[in-house]
Every structure is written in C-alpha cells, then in structure tokens.
Length: 345
Image 1 (cartoon, one colour):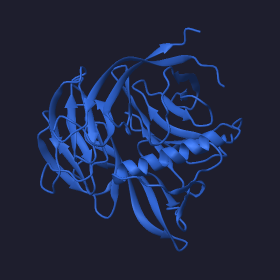
Image 2 (tube, helix red, strand yellow):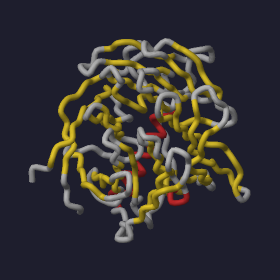
Image 3 (cartoon, helix red, strand yellow):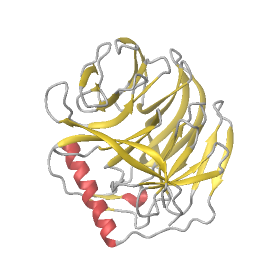
C-alpha cells in the first residue's frame, strides 16, 4: 500500500430521478462542470445532455433523438471550449453548440464511431474513435487517437493506433483476451495513453504535434492476483451491466482475467498533473505525476466507491472540484462533488 499524501473527500451531492420527462435521466454516462459552473449530464439512451445547477435544479436540455441538425444518436462524450461552446460526439458526428447551447454546426465522422472527445485550445479537439477491422482473420477494433481542427476533414496529428480483438470465442467472454486503452488529454494539448496490461505499468506521452516525448515504466510493479471474491464480484458486475444495457436480465459465461490491471484509468487535472489509477491496489488510489513523469503525490478517495469499469466514474477536476457518480444507479442518480485535501494522518 503506497503512502497516501492527499484525500478526495465528498463535500456535497445532488440527486436526479429517473423517468420519461426531459428533466430526468435514463442512462447517464458522463458528467462535468460547465464553464458557467453548472453540472452537465450526458444521457446516452435519451440522446441528450441535461444541465443542472450545483443544487440539482434542472436548467434545460441540449440535443435529443433524431438525425437532423442539433439532434443526436447515442452520444458518447462531450466537452466545452474555453468560450463556452459545447462539443458532443455521437454515433457518426461531432456537433457544436454555442454558449447558450443552441445548435451551430456539425462534422461527419465517416466509417467509425467517435467514443471520446476532448477540447484543446480555441478550436481543436482530440478524438478517440474505433474502426472495425479484421486482424489475423479475427474480428477486431482499431482504436485511434488523433487531433483535428473544427471544420477540417483531415487530422493534424495522430497519437496512437492500437488493434484489439473482440475477444468473444464461442459462447463465453474471455476477458483475459480483451484489451483496453486508457488515454487522457491535457489542456496544453499533450496526450497520454496506456494499453491494458496486468504485467507492466507503462504509459506514454505525446506533444500536441504527435511527437513522442515521454515513456514511463514503473519497474517495481508486481502483478497481483485477484481473490475469488473479487473475480465473482467482477462477473456479477459485468452481468449487471449487460442486463442494464439490454433492459432485461442477462447471464453470460464471463471469464475474468485472474490478475489485476496495472492502470485502470487516467486523467489530467487543472494544474497539468497526470492522475493514474492504480488497479493493483485495494481502494481507490491514484499516483499523480507532473508532465515530465515525476511522481508528485499519492491520492485516495476517502469514501467507499466501487471503481469497477462499469460502476463509479470520477470526472476530471474543474474549478478545484471533482465529480463522481455511479453510472449503474437503479432508483435515482446521485452526483457527488469532491475536493482534494492533505491527508490529516
């Protein structure tokens, strides 16, 4: 267990109900503070973003299901430009809304599904997309992370391109054969990524131009085997997630990787510090590095949140505050606001 320098503590929370009205939610997958200080919630199955005050009062809805201008189809991610304009990535487009969240324009993303978008500077963004392909005769996805300028059809830089198998032979899901790609983007345009590994603790950094500038490897990392209870909890969590998405009970033959992943998440905070979630430790622990890969502190979430891939999601910092939520909540959706403090111990 690493020595903990700082804690993330809950300072406030809001509760939003599930339902059919615009002010309620169905399948929230991303939350963030807006530049105006409100809270934006992306609801994938309602095809829109809802804006709430920090007290939980509904303000308005952005988007909605459809194919026309300003409409969305299964949105995956969003971010804000510094001037307040809003970008939303859905099934085949990147849509832009003005500071009042009125539709402005959209770009087509042909032949792929944009699954993440992060604003960089005044008019650029970093996009992650997956492209179906065949690798050694087996179906796979090619994950690509690149940078674009708004209005341009050409990428200005490419950071990584990783091919990963679908990993579903027969009638079971072998998770030891499925890769994953963690990445994050700093506001200065630098991009960091790490491939799924239970054997190595490695991440890489790229300049905005796409030039590789940082390779970090923790040679002291030791792989950690999951307990039987952890494996069963992962099976139950995965089945709960697939049932949640399908809208009915599903029981799959899931075979988890017997070892814990080295890096389970990553993001960059407002002070350009790189947060790396340590998957091998019990509890929610992050090692924090500067842009040169120098370790600065270890942080732990003080409250008990099950940070499995399908449950609790921690949103990067804005205005000195973090947001955390359970994307598989059943009765109501609760967003916790958190702040970073020194460990009193």
